[in-house]
Image (cartoon, rainbow, N blue to C red; front, side, top):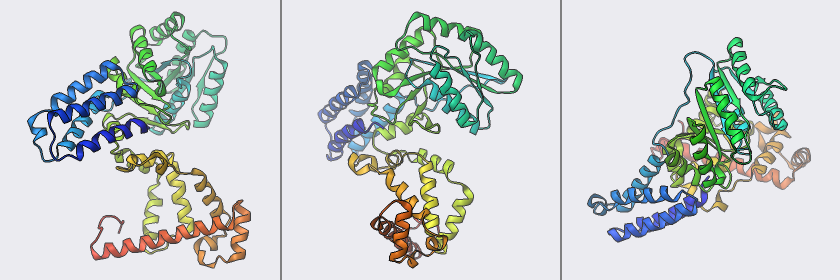
Length: 441
């Protein structure tokens, strides 16, 4: 996410950090470079101009230029301004005190509305809500079928009535939700390839008919200023309460995320970071600013871990680590838990410092994890618990059973042995008082 803008900004800041003392001219040169980076990332030109002015006003003050670490001070100012630009604090959904809460999802065709509706329903269900999806896009048959498929996958009902105009369908859906105890009603409305009067008129009629508590505008995060222009038009004709940026796991340059709040005044509430139905994050301006500046996002990483790792299994793992009973079965379980948290490349970028490394060094081959899982699954229980008994014939059998080679099996066993050695060294350091806190005992 935002690899290009992160790399370019880090290059600018590296020059600043390398100087013991900054002059006003040094700061202005750096800000010119930052402005160029923002414009190349497709940030709205007015937003980029205002951003640079705000940073300059704070960065050329005597308390910055004469500070012990002026370069770091400038980075802190840029971080604060990025956070302010994207909304300062995370924005919540508004829920009605009298159910159902009606959430209307709008946007252009292809922006990812239908997938987002399903992701939101899944998220709300995990939070204890009873959501219902409404297939109000009757013009694209694939949209109705797609929503029904998503509903089946996440265990959420989908309301649809054939041969019913969208306005009447939405009104019937809300009534159905009220009668059957669903406390959230998510309307997946129709979009077009471009904004036209017919589409906007229909959306306005739906809004007037059901009076939604929340209207969310869904924008393709990869389209940059096109997304911002579409948001301006939807805001003018329909109004909305918040923005959802999708496809942020792709080659998103950052223009939409950095511009849309400043241009529309509406907060970004969610970002889509993948195709899977759990790939939805609440938008935190401060955390996103940290990611953009290559500082990682350890808070989101911890939240993902807490969600993916079961507490009982974590406690059992800690007990085994204390007694050095960590087996290949545990190794397999840990790989599965980590993969639940999302794509490994995305997780790595949340670790402070690692996001500054070249992209080639951050690439993780997910196929290798699949291969390792197949190898361990091809072992007997005894072999998983006592890998030292694996002789040549056993390794050949495991390789055949997993569709791999003996070299692959040996490589996995070597990695596991290295992991065990590392844990023993950390245990010894912990006992001697070094590295305390690095190991859980």
